[in-house]
Image (cartoon, rainbow, N blue to C red; front, side):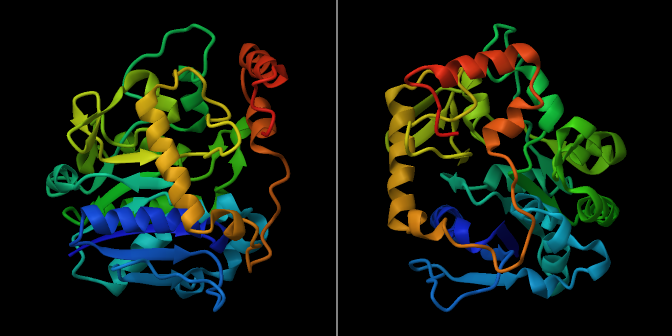
Amino acid sequence: MKIAFTICSNNYLAQAKILLQSLSNTNADYVLILGLVDKKLESIDYTIKNTNIIIVEISLLNIPEEYNIFQKYNIIELSTAVKASYIKWIKKTYPKVEQIYYFDPDIKIFSSFKEIEVELKNKSIVLTPHIYKPIPMDNFIPDETLFLNYGIYNLGFIGISFEQLRVYDFLNWWEERLMKQCFINVENGIFVDQLPINYVTVFYPEITKILFHDGMNVAPWNLQERQISIKGKEYYANDKKLLFFHFSNICFEKGKHPIYNRYELYPMLEELYDAYRDELKKNYFFELRKLPCWYKVKPIKKPVRQRILGIMPQKFREYIKSLVSRKNGFNKY
């Protein structure tokens, strides 16, 4: 038995529906779970065509009140803080599950996970880095130092199996850190769920596998090393089948990512983004994103641009500000 899941609040449901539909289309033998960090509302249609989705509200996790997660975290922090807790709940509820995959809701799946499944038969943790290759020091974004602030590995994806019992030690270790300090506080070496995972290859090397697959977790921050193309009816990243693409910080107004700007927009990439935007619209993206979370979580005080500019080295702050000031800059962010 294999399970794939995501986590979101109601206002991110349009993205989650695309993810879950693409999972169903490409990996039909998986049980699919939507972890809802919100209350299920009768006014929202949670169904997905020809796909059975199990909705698990966060209240079912029975997280101890002492952690105070609904009061101390904003919605981004809350959604990332419960990843390990959901994995543990899934294993407890479905004891026969052999492999569990987490995906951020703004990911779309394009191919089968057979290659990943093979790796999880030998290891219990599978991760993929943000980037695989050195980045030139040419004053463009991204820069290698960015990932020292935000994490070497992108936790938009993690695969877990239970081949080695030590994976339970890992989940307990990770969960404690997520419950206590899953903040956006890069200045003090904390960035939600991602920075603790930098230690996984040190603390849990014998059960961890780092995958370097060009088709995994393709995203704006690694397009400088991965060329998107189409062969027949399938997308490729370099010479590998595109497994999943991370549409992080999707932008309707400008058609570009608001921070990462090294890559040139070529027709195939635009086609990929245009198709995703169309799917978002069909899933009521604009209507859903206005919904408040039922839990009275902390507000996100600063826009994304302001938060990131606050921790970037001076030369990058100046570069981004110059982009923002241009007529075709990212002034929406």
